[in-house]
Image (cartoon, rainbow, N blue to C red; front, top):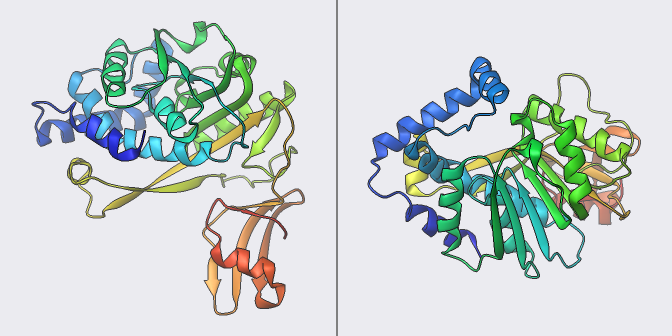
Length: 319
C-alpha cells in the first residue's frame, strides 16, 4: 500500500459533499477539539468526536493523510524484525494499519478497535482499495478492550482523548509482544500525555526505542515540549478545505516507541531544525547527559558530515 492509493481511496468517499460543506465540517471539528469545555464534555461522556457524515469525510480529507505520513515515518524507526500482527487502538478509519502495512511487508493480520461505528464502515471501504491485511474490526471503548497479544500495538492520537490513560497504557503494553508506539499531537498537552505514558511503560519493564537516547528523567525544561515534524504534500482539495496557500503542511507530533527487549539507543536526538552556517552547524540535542547545544565544525570531520545532512528529529552517532 502507498500514499497515492490512500488518497485515491479517500477521494472515492467524498461523494456528493460540496467543498463548502467539507470546509464547514472541518471548522466544526477544529473548534470542538480546541475548546476545552467541549473536549471535557466529549471525554467525560465517552462520545464520538465526529457527529455527522460530512465531518467524517472532512476528517479523511484534511487529517488522515498527515497522520498516515507521521505514522509511516515513525514506524520506520522500529528495529528490523518481522511484524506479523498489529493492534490498532482508536483506529478511526484505519490510519495506523495503513501505515503499518506500508512499512512491514510481513504484516498479515490486524485488529482495529474503534468506538465510532460509522468510521469503522468507512475504514472497511477504504481497505478494499488496497492489499489490506486480514482485518478484524471491533466497535468499543478503549477502556473495555481485551489485550490480546499482537506483535505491534499502535495508539495514535487517542490517549489525549481519554479521561485517564493509565489503564489503556497498561493494556496496550500487555498486548504488545514486540513493540508499542504511542503518538499524540505535537503540543504541550500531547507531550505531557506521552511523558506520563513513557514513565508508566518504563515502570512496567519496557525498553525505549525512541525518541529518547536514554531511559532517565526527561530533561525538557518547563514550558518547552519535545515534538517533531513530518512534511506532507497537500492535495488540491486538501488545500481548498483548509484554505491554505502552500502545497504542503507540517504535521507535528510527540511520540514514544517501546520494546519488550533492549535495543541500542542513539547517542543523541536532534530537537530542533539544525542551524547550518558556513563551515559549522548549530544543533540542540537530547543526550544521556541532558539537553545540550552543540556547534559542529569542519574539524569534526565525520560528525560534521552527519550534521550537514541532519534534520530535526534525526539521530547522531556521536556528540
